[in-house]
Image (cartoon, rainbow, N blue to C red; front, side, top):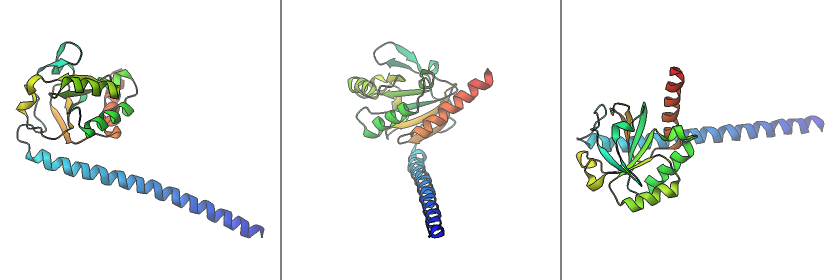
Length: 194
């Protein structure tokens, strides 16, 4: 009786462990599939773009800052940062802003992320308040800047270095993990300098 109970307990532990490991691997594979599908979708759009390519340098531009002054784009760039072009009422844009909020741990993290739009600034201001982000929200008055580039999907993410060189682009929302990768990259650079 005792050995049967012991064998049953061991079997239950092994079964639970197998279920746990199976769930973990399923989650991992699901995330990989989702990331690959997102990359494939984005790649098709990026291949059609003619005005903006990886390796290009974005032109400097003076943007209006929501609720304040104006600022030159080059003054906001850091070692690695993301300029996200959004439409304030776009569900994926709002989701991306929420994902960024989950990734940011302190105020120094937020300086690596910039949101920009040419759409209704009042709705853009509401988006900023609703998400609670303290990143820069820039307004491109009359689409003076973004009309130069053939961006047609939103959100559209452009990863840049401090000189404005395009390192990567993604059509569609970035995820918390994407933002954390940028944050960790910048933190590792800062710690190497100190």
